[in-house]
Length: 627
Image 1 (cartoon, rainbow, N blue to C red):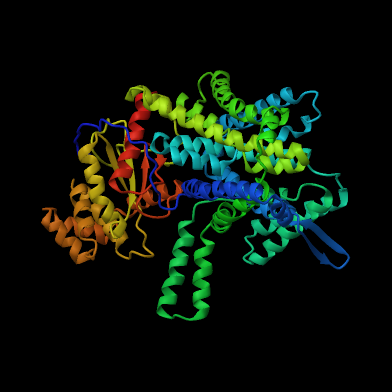
Image 2: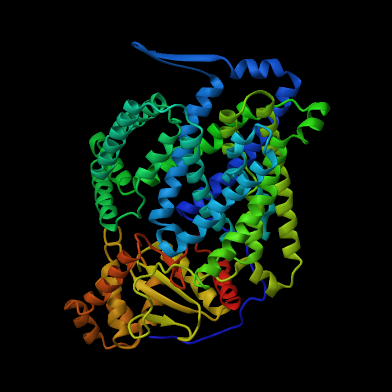
């Protein structure tokens, strides 16, 4: 089942992240990185506004707004509504991303969870200890929470500015650790920075959360029910004395993440086909509902709320909280103040120390069984950029301090973010100066990946092109009638021509949209029975519009096959089980569409153009070299 061949590997390492086709984590990275510019602009506007007209700045954000319902009223200023209200949606997105990581990401495997957990917690504990040491005896120790949490959007935005020096795995590693960071930070806010606790509203909040979990478990289709439960949960927590933004986190954690079920996708396709035959408003609603139902609640909520929080709510939060007056006398005193120094040193020095210490500690405790998914250089760079703490830092500062101390804490967070960004740029510039081999080792490290492919490649069963012994295996789940698979075919051939890889094709005929795909897959297997799988494979992908039985028999004749045997195999469906085994593999591996690629057992979430696949293969090669 093999077609041999080999050629030299590329001599240069490509580390620039490429765009994907809807990968959830990649979308999260892109949205966070893209919004960083707007967030930074909001900080600049707030500083300029506060220094040009301090009175108008503070007058706007201290304007009171009250909502009254019968004998109950919620009264707060605009800054309070933003910090305690709209920022709940920000933590909703954090909860959603955390749940996605637990269900589908690196945190789904207990062994892989140990390192992000340790790095995230140490990345908070060490800065807190630094802050407490500097502020001991000054009466400002209660503000320790300001120095602990990183800002995901600004950190990823800074990495985007640094550019191609930062490998994609380093960004993923950073986000995984910061998910733990955000979860722990919100627990700190709920426990240490909430008011006096009232038991009865807290019981009501627990009941509302139980109802929310039930609604999720039965997949209640009415969205307004979830909205009302969420608002009621927020109000109950606020009345209980627990910081109401915790509602966002628990709602996000309640929303499960999963890949679309192929059966539901087929049902949705049937609804769309019925609408095409009879375009009525009723069928339009059914088709829309069916398509939406294929996505997990987590994916639907992230798609809706994440852009709003990243591009509007968090920048508004920055605009409302970052405006401080920067006159020379204040700066001279503030940069010597314990609060400012504790925040700056905690972030700029404490975070990188914590990241490096956590990776070494976990590796030592596990005796090398658990290692960072990136090299020592990327760990250091992730630690320095984690010193960019802004959103949660200002959120806690507003709860811990007032007056001058609040201004000092804000100045410390802004300064730490700027210094950490510059230090990270220096770290990656120094890494760039290393020889290529040492640089690859420093950036990629030992990337032992979670295996997403089920089952693994079997040389006795799978169709393999290229050398059996190649350490790099590219697997494609494909459909002979799928036009995207046809587009991918020349890319795969170019990849095989340029790299010493092993390529595997597995069938996934999408019969709901491609009626001839199943027959074509069985025809390829019938040709394989006569030793001509790859010849038929190539022919089918170049003639995707002509896959009826008569066409397939003609192709068998062109390839010099025994046509009677070929026809009999198709008529008796002798190879249906062989195709079904590949389809079962797709289901077990979470594959719903074609083409879907795996590289050495890990799903490839990027595009399938030649530069992107080449970069992914090259990264796999470099990972092998540095183990």
